[in-house]
Amino acid sequence: MAAQRTTPLTLLVGLSTTLRQPVLDAIVDAGTVAVVVDQDELPDRGVLTWRVTDASGPVDAGEFTVDDDCGSCQLIESLLPLLETLVERGHWQHVVLAAPPAMEARSLVNALVATAPGVTVDTVTCVVDAVLLVEQLSGDELLDERGLALSPADRRNVAELTARQIEYADVCVLANAHRGRAPERLQNLLLHLNPRTTVVEAGPSGVPAGPVARTGLFDFSAAEQWAGEVADGQRLQPSGEGVTTVLWRSTRPLHPARLNDALEDIVNGVVRSRGVVWLANRPTQRVRWESAGYSASLGTLGEWADTEHLAECTVVATGVGLDPARLQSTLDACLLTEAELAGLDWQSLDDPFAGVL
Image 1 (cartoon, helix red, strand yellow):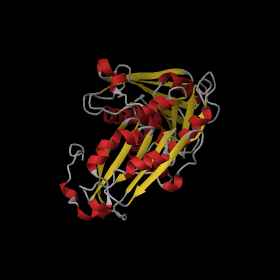
Image 2 (image 1 turned 45 degrees about the vertical axis):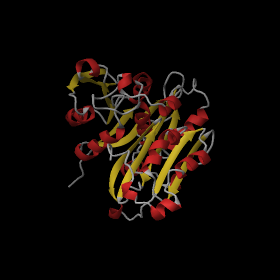
Image 3 (image 1 turned 180 degrees about the vertical axis):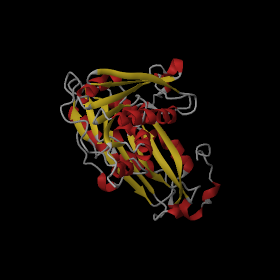
Image 4 (image 1 turned 90 degrees about the horizontal axis):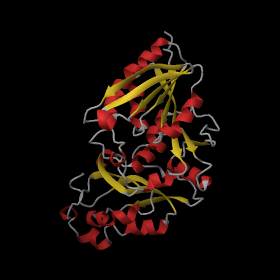
């Protein structure tokens, strides 16, 4: 039996719909149909609007209703039937899906891979603003504060969203490169956050200078591995242009109270960090570490006994102007001392993370 023919799909993400539009225009050719989802009406009317266009002009339009629970979940549920209908019509050889600004590529791709057999994810393209990139990766502003949250329960910040969009992208389009300062530094930063990505600059008109769609670059396994629990030290990028990535490891557990007290110092100068840590008062539990901008979060990952690893701490941190020695010293100071290792009842320690773990 012949394999089912599938249509390649390019996923376009990025915070600025204004900067994304010239990229979208450059992608849409005679064989391409584009599905563009906007969230401008979400705060007031609770809907995500969508429009379908091709090279000849508008094809269709409508809206998806979103309640208060999970805007991204409802978008995925509503979007898949629309994509299937377009593919079944057989008029186009390529689909572009321009996601809402606050949508992460990973959840959309996972849904497409699992439940949309008519399409094959070909390229994930993220458009970033050269002028605002470092600022967006470094702050603590919530999406809700910018009117970009996908639901009232969406407590993500701008830095977290920006980092995750970059980390999953096959291509990063550096828009406003002619207006940004030190474009080489920005390119280096993007490659530190995602060594898989190809950086393409956009010209003054916003049109990318290289291929950004139908590249065949998407590799689901590689994308999922990079977006997973922790980056492998073998994939660290060399420092340059003021951008540094630090790998910190320890076979000693962290003192929970000292870690909590040091959170602000740890994320100072770090735009992104990920890892797995070992908390002394939770000796059997693997704990996910993640930070973006000035926000850090911890979550549960299961038990150490369920893995091939001995309990340890591994954190990979990237920053602009980052002092590696200061960061490593700050993290080292959070570890149990030799005396505490020998004589302390670890599980009796106060637990400042009880509300999140």
